[in-house]
Length: 193
Image 1 (spheres, rainbow, N blue to C red):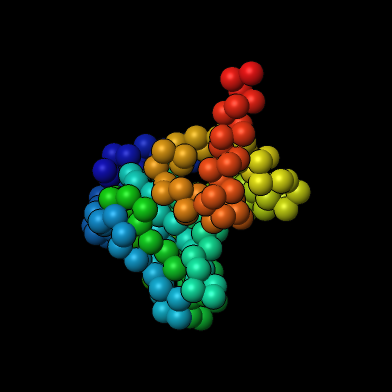
Image 2: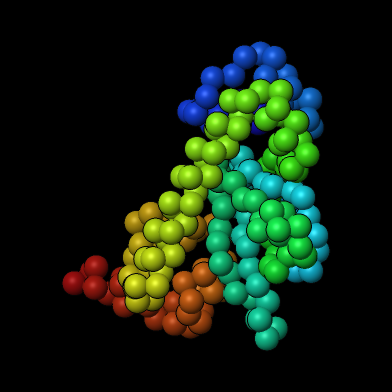
């Protein structure tokens, strides 16, 4: 799994053997079972996650109902806002599938950035990419109908349709599971005619 991470990093910066060994020595690789909750509402955390294999999701529980806000799959990272604000988390993070990820904290990151300044450069690039992607996703969500959201998902992240339980997918799209079933049937019918 470390090679998967190194290949990803290589898209942004080149690593020396010393830098690779420094990453390995951090002991950041974790295998986590499907259903494991990594972060709970009200919990404080310093942990950031990077998915090497599998899928994690963020969700709120509002009036007893889960409201999924995001899915993170291979080569996607998540630093929950509570890590930066040093306040209790407002949402949950859990594994949708058996997942292999890296778990790092702000202390580790500060140490790596001071030893190897190019990591800070890479983190800045990743943050900028993520911020731009999140803004586009948010704008698309706010300006589109549930059907358009589903079609966007089919186009941009088709793997989620197979990997994620329908009720979580419906919540992510901002609709009820029954509405998602009707929507899928309608789209299927349109495509056949």
